[in-house]
Image 1 (cartoon, rainbow, N blue to C red):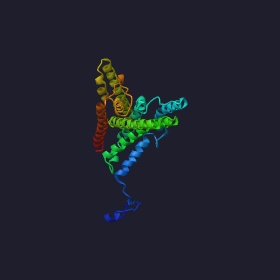
Image 2 (spheres, helix red, strand yellow; image 1 turned 120 degrees about the vertical axis):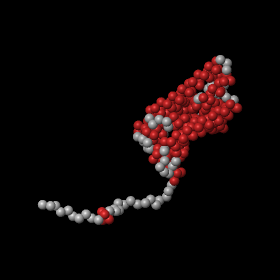
Image 3 (cartoon, rainbow, N blue to C red; image 1 turned 60 degrees about the vertical axis):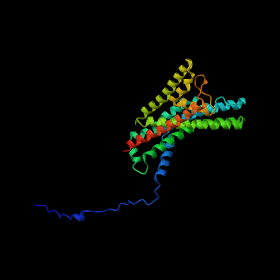
Image 4 (cartoon, helix red, strand yellow; image 1 turned 120 degrees about the horizontal axis):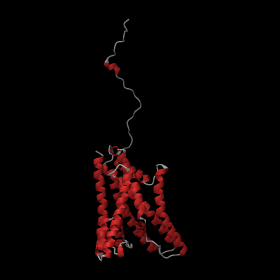
Length: 302
């Protein structure tokens, strides 16, 4: 027995348009500036694990505490002994705590950029409305700001303790301001170096190891060469050797212009003229890091 099929409907009657509730967006277009600010605030919060899991908060908060506890101890001793001067100057504190700062940069620079590379989300950022320059500026500013908080908070503790100990207000305020300038330059330089290294590997572990290696090996090598030059009577070469390590660069700037004591062998810090070269090196290296990051992310976002 033959099966009868209903006649096929004309092609026009097979097409249906269903209204499932999609509506066009007619609100404000906030644009690149808003996206850049959002990326900055998100990255800054992420640098301390805010808005992330408890596990992500442990290391940055621990390092922040390690930075502040010695300053609080010095303040307590100064208040108890009624000292007339803090045992460590404001400009010297970050140099003394450089290992903690380097570890923080090594842990947070890859967190800021390596995950985006690993999960290939960078092109999504650049789809619209931001461009590669906006991404780089936001990440650079966020890590530099996080570092400034890390290095500036102990100085605030020291300054408050000095005023509680009734040390000279004008003198302490001047040294506190010099210390803030010093850590601002340090934050800018370390953030640039850390991000450049981390931006070339999608694996966070490799980024952490590379940042630690660059910061510690360069400082160890430069300090060794400076010591050799000083022993051999070439003290004039000591300041110039200091140009090749981020830590000694900051040390040279603050000893030349910010009233800091130099940690160079023999206490031979750079002169004012050499200090200008140090400042140019810090600013130039920071600008170079920004340029490298911008070129890197223009390629990644293609």
